[in-house]
Length: 329
Image (cartoon, rainbow, N blue to C red):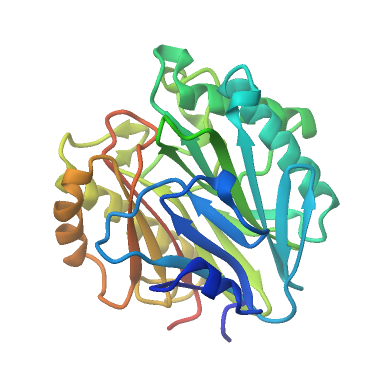
């Protein structure tokens, strides 16, 4: 059974891609999210490192409808919803308050949506490593997010797969977008890592709230949404060089895939199963090395894009996320 969500990287313009009625979202790179032209257009401020520019296209089946909820815009088919929120940080005192407001909007939106179960959330945080100690931007983002989720649910908040990457400090928007369905996914944890919400206090006053991956089922097909995955074992960063961190990141990706296969009792998901990967690189001068290492670790038919972005910890140099089919290629 073909997955409902088809993801590809294509060498075409945003406007041309939006002419396709089956398109749920088009992601362009290197532009402010505040420059979105319509609900299905999701600009991402991270610069693309690949020499040939591409757009990421989400296609689906059936009629795609669009609309807005407060500052959030959405595109929806029968089986799923893509929601996109870009909050202008110039209207907020700090990242703590912007993050809390952003997740209040996200929670309000999901509560009234026919697709109220988030499968994955992407967060792009300007200047993510700026600030000292608990005042670091990412730590304040986590505090705001946790407060918004705790206000909505007394118990454990929902924790789908997620990515948090640093956009340029000059970017004015905190960007969040999500994929949601009508039925809960199966959250998957990595046996090699401590669950993120159990991180010790040394990483901030509030732990990050996400699962390492989420299994999504729609229309009889399954897909695995992989969270931002870096060179972390237990809760500690491993290695002080980019090449070794890439290898460790891929060990974690493969560990997640193995855990998903165990839960499903299946030989899938596996790299090469109609999959796409995003690779985030802190230092653009390391792009060539990251690409060479991954070419030895990832099948050629796995589409990927390389983006310049800061990672949530200052000692992390690269991170990988992706969407992989679970039912074979």
